[in-house]
Image (tube, rainbow, N blue to C red):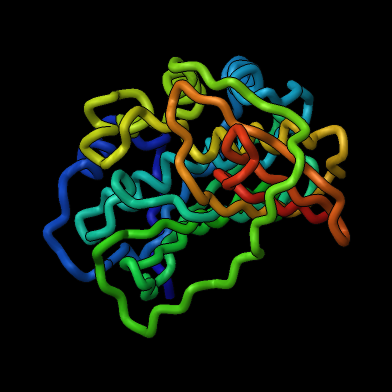
Length: 282
């Protein structure tokens, strides 16, 4: 039976991130086997309003699935700052995210959150790890999310298998978004994600980026905001993070009907290459 560690309060991000910043000398990817749980999480409406402003989402009585990810994210950091973990969240590459909103979730509902990590699996560039989260109300699962991270240069058992991707075809854009140099700090404020590659030029360069990059989950939320007038009350959404977005910068956006839902892309300003690919299905 999988052990469950129940926290009394939200974990402190500062200490967890400080541990996550420590370089791992291990070559084999290893993650904790327990579940981290936090019950009775009260949603902060003022913070939700700020989050909505930063991401372009409309403030409503019900919340978007990306907001619930924000609430669960401290458990991600806490889990991978465990002494047993050799995969560090800071430095790992967020390659994809999948969420399912099982029913509309009110901003007034208290949420019971839980996060666990799956067994690392081999990838041609390292090891992949899924952090699987769920939110419950009264024992019923109302939201589920899986964030997949690539720990480059690490090993995991098995034969590397790359998931096939739909070919990207440049098409006409429906809009362009200009991203300010302060966007990383703004999203850090509302998300609580203190990874310095999003706010510090020095830290970004240390990880191989010319300038700070915007959080992938901001791009995810902003793309959902562009589609929100079409979104049903319950849906699933999958995104692949293809190319980091440097700040300041400009990106393109396009969306199209797809069988059973919608597909969308956030691209380079000319529409030639993708930053994010999204699939929304009711």
